Amino acid sequence: MKKQLIRMVWVLLALLGLLSVGACAYIQHPKFGRLPEGERLDIIQKSPNYADGEFRNQVPTPMFTDGSSFLDALVSNLFTKSVRPKPGVPLPSIKTDLKALDPAKDTVVWMGHSSYFVQLGGKRLLIDPVFSTSAAPVTFANKAFEGTSIYTAEDMPAIDYLLITHDHWDHLDYPSVKALEPKVRHVVAGLGVGAYLEQWGYSKEKIHEADWFATVNLEEGFTIHVLPARHYSGRLLTRNRTLWAGYALETSTRRIFFSGDSGYGPHFREIGQRYKGFDLAVLDTGQYDRRWANIHMNPEEAARAADELQAKTLLPAHVGRFTLAKHSWDEPFKRISAASEGKRPKLLTPKIGEPLYLDGHTQQFSKWWEGID
Image (cartoon, rainbow, N blue to C red):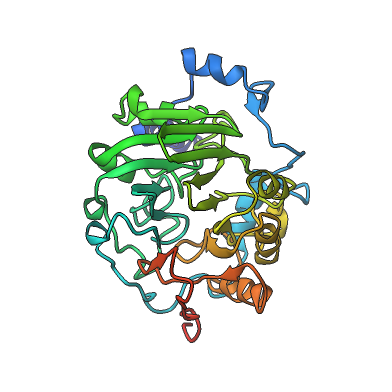
């Protein structure tokens, strides 16, 4: 009996050893990226938003508001049942031919969650393109809703600017970004994010990293402002080594704001006052939870932020493709619709792939989520 027990212990130890070796080998995959170092790290360490080895939000931002740890939240998510986390049928979409769009026509096309194709001032941009059907390091986790994965890198035209808000898996997608490289002229990202892009085949000349309130102005008449967000970064176990950000896109005739992932904070009013309003605000509206209320807005906060940004119109983001919180898949749409009813800014709710024309003041969108279980 004693010999059998010893043998079992050795077998278990051997299995644990193999699992450890396998895990160590797996996390060497380039999709996990690399941390900033050398000259890139030297620049980061001079940032006023960096202290004690990490980036900081403008205001104190505990990740969990109830004193939970990351492990507590993980266990809770595993054992707490969600109500209608995914739609029961494929979601409706319109696969617009992006290559055929008139580049002179200012247009935004939502591609699900926080991925956008933008035409503005004759430039073509992609914001956080995620064409993979999973927003996680393993393909069986965080699966996309049926009917929402309608675009691939091959469907994209030549891209003037690729914008990355931060390094989380549902915003920085290794296979998508790697496949897009031959089509991309410039990449704009927060400080440190370029370390991923260089590892994935982008030349240093293409990459433009910037701090909050910096301006990227590579061509006359087209400006990208890198702006604060209230969030965090980290792709594996490290946290806050790269900068998370929102963006304002500005031409002589229009301004568009993208919040990236962000909790509600004073930065929205500050940005609204600094830039004197926006034609469109694209705001984090989903995947909220009371435990992480500091780092993701709920719909009512998004409506308030849009007002403080002095936005004319509001487009919800971080919705409609992945389940990353316990609310029902359509709750963000219902709540932002109620919060915006009869108010400015005007709420816009295109389907995935449906063009939003920025000069289309009479353009109307349906509440397409209604009637879907």
